[in-house]
Image (cartoon, rainbow, N blue to C red; front, side):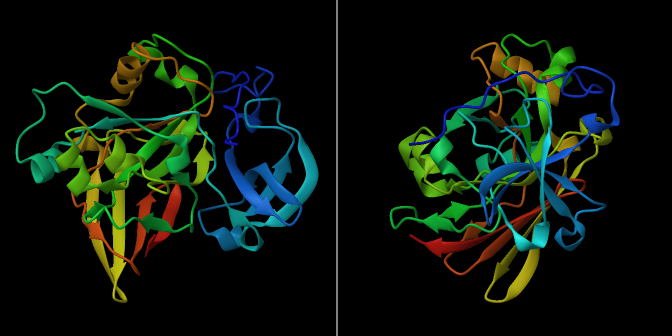
Length: 294
């Protein structure tokens, strides 16, 4: 059975898990498969190099008071899982001007945003294979900035978006482009199992990111040759972060752990069996996955 949505309260940025000022308010959260089993953890150390980081197990989830159990492992010695198991993944389509021109051959500034869902069963973690079924013949990567929700929320005003966010991570909104256009709606094209790689961790220091100038890169390795395919910037976003969260929560309640995909920039390309795709966003590390036929 798929895990129930995580619940709990989340304090404002600048407070600890009890709502008191604390330097512990800024953390990296992850989920790992350790020798003793799966657990949530804080990821500690400088930089994004896994060789220099440590996973420290916490009791419960990131939505409760953070208490370490005392168990820890070098991050290179454990397996990173998707950092969250959301009740739903909510995505904004046609939100990067360069990608809209690339795929739809038109401008999207005059169009309302496209809202769609990816099922929780599409979520997979860093290093796990993206598995392409035989009926999907043109499967493309879409490197994106993802938002992880920190508390139940509805009708959030754009100016208040930070108050409901746990942190940022990376998502690959894998899409079967042939099914997307053939079906007339996007559920099957974007909802196939493993079509939502997520990770490597959640960075809660959201004030450390310049959302008007955040580079997003994707590198595809094919036949042993690695090429930079996506090389864009969040300045291309049509709908900004506060607007995205206001738009979504006007229609539906978001729960702790829910993930928002904020849109893909240009440079998407088809992947095939044997490829390796890696998404990189400064401050969030790299999300890499092999590709194989199902």
